[in-house]
Image 1 (cartoon, rainbow, N blue to C red):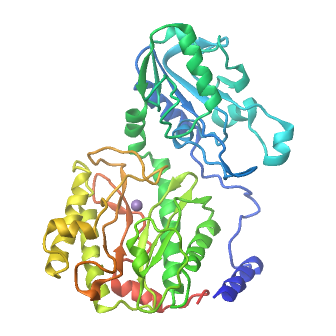
Image 2: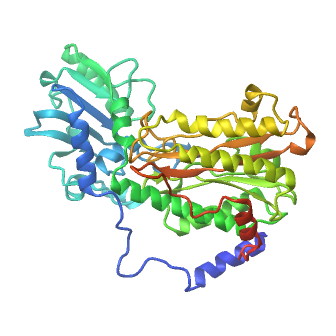
Image 3: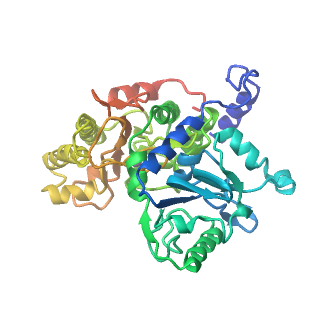
Length: 465
Ligand SMILES: [Mn+2]
């Protein structure tokens, strides 16, 4: 397998049949537009109080080991509002105009200055002019301008931030680690100002905004889901006994990257047999053997938006009778869940619909005696919202523009209190569903879900086989 993968990669480099960027367009041009980000800031400003100030920090660069950092990953809230993919920046939004550094307006951003030495090593920094041109925002400053006299504290009575505990800018339970130094500076400024300022959270507001996807966002999630679905198809075609879990992962991620996805949406899960019963298994080291199922929960992130797709396939291309019986229950449960993805229905109804099918199926097969026992074999929820975060924010009642996963599963690890023939079967099927005014749309439908279709695809030719 190793040598055939190498051969394929070599072919990919020299083959003219693979599509690389056309010369007329050197970089992607399907990012969120400046108008999108401006509209999201406008929507947020409407949701804060008259004398409120909302603050959002860019994510920090994070160290992996020694002087090597992780690839930079922007705060999703910050990206949603600014489109800026750089650290060391902070955004302030106001409902009514304030004056700050001689400029009057409702939105102000402070970002890192250009720096030839830094840019020599890690590439271009946008700087004030670059970001003004990109964003069409007026009030853009370098972050060294942020000091004791900068903030219009006399004009505000409340601060909205993501961080709720101790201190206005939080020290604290930061879900997204901000510019620690700047946050501390801001804390000290507010304290020095010696004025009672209410502390509010932006979590609820952001959840309302991000939970309903705009057309530009849906296009990107759809793209991520389509790329992901076809990656799963590549694994279905390629799978064979003797392949290692990480080789299935490599085939999947090769496809994602080859289609322009910058990241995976989350660490790829590729677990065979009992490893499929570990919900977030990412070790991916085992040899996949004939007679086993491989569960792959893998998806692409495209321009910031993640898909989340799971398929479960037999290593030798054919489900055993026992595997098929479990698989069919999960598939029916998923269909029931997808049918419940309708505007006006509760988010929790999706789980209820899927779980009822799993419960009945497990009881009918004698695997579980009752619903309580059945939950042991389906120990997670059926759905989560999907968007900039793979586990995204969103409303408790579905409406058009919500995107959510439907992902029931049944996991029966060896040693479970049931007939041994069920042991080490782990099945999950997961798709990404767009709620509309009409029928739900499966954005990841490009990958088959039925036993017959999967077996047919597994019989097909693969360059990896
Ligand atoms: Mn999921």
